[in-house]
Image 1 (tube, rainbow, N blue to C red):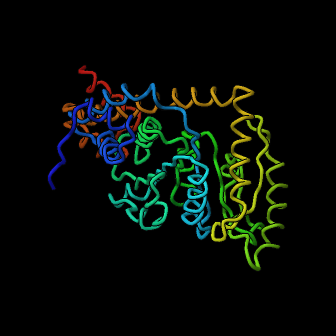
Image 2: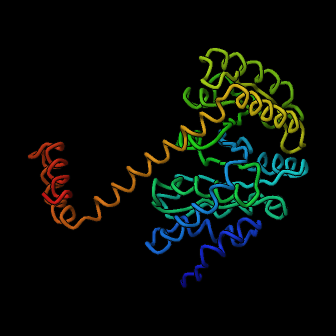
Image 3: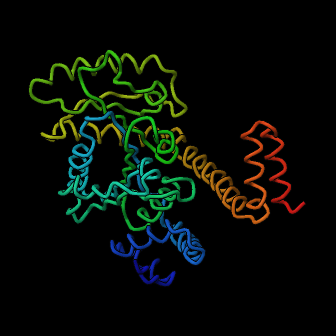
Length: 330
C-alpha cells in the first residue's frame, strides 16, 4: 500500500487551525506513525498546535458488556452537538494490539453521529505504537482540541483493560451500568468504581424503569462507601435511556457542574498538569525501551542471556544488568 504524501508542517498546522477534518485525520495518522521522518514532522506540528489545545472537556467513557455504550455515545453526542458543541470521539481498543487490527466498525456503529458535521469519530489506532495503542491518543486529543472540538470522548473497549489509561488522560470519567445486576456489580472491579466521577444506568426505559431507579439507589449507596477523591467531588448516579434520548440533559448538567466545582477548587488545573508530567515520564520509559531493544550490542547478547534466564542458570537481575552495560557500551 502506498503511503499518502505527507504535507508540510505549515499545511498541517493551518488545516488543523481551520478545522479541516481531512487534514486532522491525516495529522492523527502522522502522529501515530513510527517512521523517523514522520516523528520529526509530528513533533514540529505538536509544538505549533499546543498553544491552541487544552480548551475542551475530556470525558472518559467505559461500561459493562451489553450496556449499549455505542448507542449512548451516539445519542449523547447528538444531544451535545444540538447544544452547539463540537465533539470528537476517540477509541482505545487494547485488543487491537494483539490482532494488529482495529475496530474499524466505529463509524458503522455510530452512523448518525459519523454523518454529523459537528462530530468527528476516529477509529482506534492499532499495533504496538509508543506506549501501546493508547500511546498516541493523547496527541490525538491535542490535535482535536486545536481543531476546535470542545468536547472529547475517550471510549474504552472492554472492561478492566484500559480504564486506568483513560482515567489518566481525561477530566471526567463516566461508568455506564445496567439495572438488575447490582448484586454482583456486574463484575466491575472496585478500582474502576472508585475511578468513576459518575455512574449512569442506561436502558432506563419500558419495563426497566423501576429496576433502574432501584439500581440508582444501590449504586449511590455503594459509591458513598468509597473515600472522597482528591477532586472533592462526590460521584453522582443518573439514569438514562439512550434509545429514547431521556436523561441526557441531566448528565450534561452534572458534567458542567463537575467542571465548575473542580475549576473553582483548583483541582481541574492541578490534575491536567499532573497528567502532562505523567505522560512525559511514560514517554521517557517507552522511548528508552525502544532504543534499548534497537541497540546492536543488546540484540547480539539477548538470545544467549534469555536462554540462560529461562534455564535458571542465570539470575534475571544479573542478565538485565549485563544487558544495560552492553547498552551503555561498557
